Image (cartoon, rainbow, N blue to C red; front, side, top):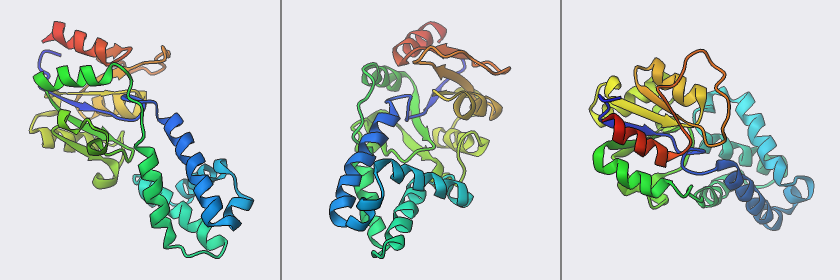
Length: 229
């Protein structure tokens, strides 16, 4: 990986654990819904918020790349179903996004971002709707590429190529770092990038294509790049 000059970095489950965040967000938002829209709260628990959102994901493939809009539409569906103003879905989505940004970074993240950003140009690349500027880590990045703005999600090569364009580098000069074997590692490699798998849980690799590197956290990635460049 001596040719690497830039890094594209996944967010959810790479820099923080996402499902505890979503679980908490849905629980807190359900309390608000129960108080503000009691007919919904009487008939649906917090887990139903995710079920309805998953139904939208299945029935609206045109929204598959936009988690914010698919979640908002799920709120709209519930509001309409129980006789409330569907426009309130925008407020509910705003509240959900506030909660969704209440993340706990893995302890290795900030030191690693500091070290990496001193040596490489770094860009965030995510299928999710986290905004790095709302998380206190935006200064470590040159920018952010999200599926909602590109119109496709990883592993589509277009999203990786847009990251390379933002970095003004050829794909071979960019290392993509992420937790998902298909969306991050194989997707990036098929787009011509190098790829490092962040395997925090010690999972087995189950695919024929193998990552250029495997690390247990970002601290190990920093050490690996120190020896490789």
